[in-house]
Length: 273
Image 1 (cartoon, one colour):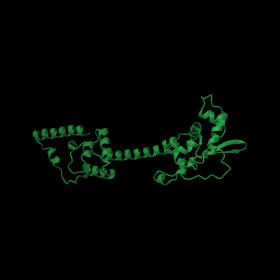
Image 2 (cartoon, helix red, strand yellow):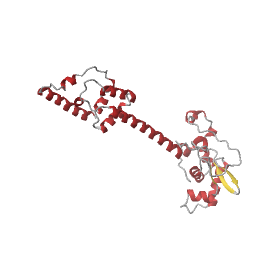
Image 3 (cartoon, rainbow, N blue to C red):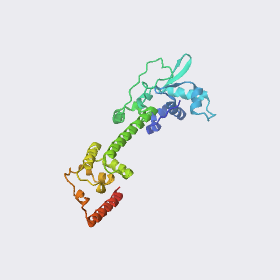
Image 4 (tube, one colour):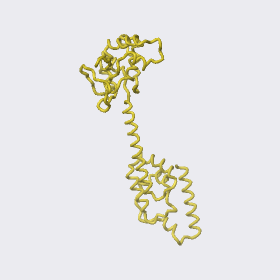
């Protein structure tokens, strides 16, 4: 099964490798990365490699492809071996530049009979590149990928977990906040607010606002407005002017003023969300 790999730009300007191998051999080398498993092994049959990498190139025969692999073997880029009369290829450089997971993904191919020196992937390698000798030019001109399919899936899982955690925190805030209207605008404001404050502090402030004595639902701010104004940082209030304004003894004028105040706040929330 072919695997996704990436090629570093330096590969194409590696003078050492270019001087020692032909252009077609270097192209085959890139293709072998796709065929190699997490243990740097692949089937060594020239017919198999030709069929996987160049199925539509009738001018390239398995014999010709075998000679290209010979070039790569002469410079140490590949190592051939046989088990039970079956040929295989091992890529000794692959583990240095690829985040492989041989311990997590078993190989279906037999291991090479020779001792394998498998260095650990080196994430700080680029920082030490200036200290490498010129003889290692081929080594750092190969490939480095952010991860195999397993790593890509892992990074997606990590991002998904972060989104789930953020969503759960917002759901907690939404369950606490006393006015549950315009949820989409509230979520947008929440995503900005948690960059300025800890979600736990925001939820604690929402509880204080919800339990504020005399708070009238009619004059409760929309969640988006409350978040955009950093209201979670407000000092706790022991009483409320709004309670007097909204009391049963309000005059007609007071009620009209209160209605106008609520309408103005509503439009201010729309403009700010």
